[in-house]
Image 1 (cartoon, rainbow, N blue to C red):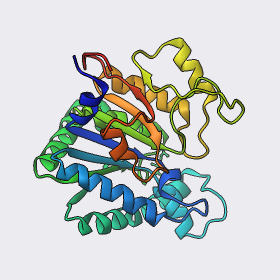
Image 2 (image 1 turned 180 degrees about the vertical axis):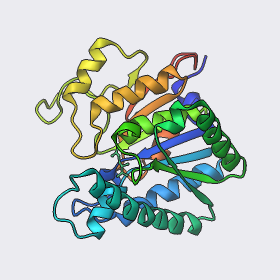
Image 3 (image 1 turned 180 degrees about the horizontal axis):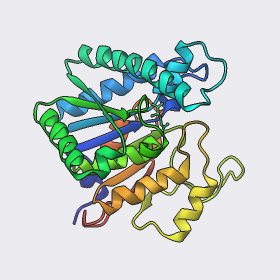
Image 4 (image 1 turned 45 degrees about the horizontal axis):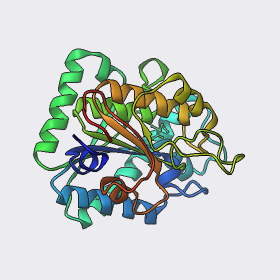
Amino acid sequence: MKTRKTHLENAKTIVVKVGTSTITHESGLLNFDRIEKLVRQLSDLRNQGKNVILVTSGAIGVGANKLGLKLKPQTIPEKQAAAAIGQGILLHIYEKFFSEYGEIVAQILLTKDDITNKARYNNATNAFNELLRHGVIPIVNENDAVAVHEIKVGDNDTLSALVATIVNADLLILLSDIDGLYDSDPKINNNAKLLTYIPHITKEVESCAGITKSKLGTGGMSTKLKAAKLAVENGVSMIIANGSNDTIIKDIISNREIGTLFLGKNKGGEL
Ligand code: GLU
């Protein structure tokens, strides 16, 4: 019988998604300390022989900040331009920190077409597999500079579940500004309980997603639950946890009771 511990420790291919709120300060500028600690933990996973894929948000926010925009970009062309600027800055920073730990990174920018079109899906799968075979860490985002409404996945929670499916991941870690899914709103109810393990996504679980709110980001809890459904259905286990904890990834892999874990279908065993 597989325990929660062996399930997490044995995860070989791990996708980690970070939201804008995790990698930026409230000012909108990058949180270098947070990014460095994230990179260090991911590099450590590589040193344990794991395949690591990072899905990162932040391109639009960082680009808007660089342009000195006072308000969040509103129009699609504004968002496209901000993303094109921000994406370069993001990659530059990740490349800098990862290279300090001897890791090679690669950028993969996807749109919905890359998932829905079979030939493009196969191309994306081949690219990921080849990079992982060489021990490279793919860094993924939506290709926001060209992905207008019709061809957009729309949020990186969903994108990361799709990426986890493409690479046949064992575990998807969604890092956000909340500890996980609660049974009631922790800001109102002191006795709100964190749901640590969700074997099945029931109607009751879905109703909990409506009351657990995250501060920033495109997603919020309902898109996280949508991502969880997608991941679980495709055999990937998923955990939602708080990215402001600097040892979060290590804690998850070493099975500290942390975050909300959804068990991927056919993973087998009790947790
Ligand atoms: N792709 C967007 C960005 O990099 C983020 C989407 C999301 O927050 O889910 O700005």
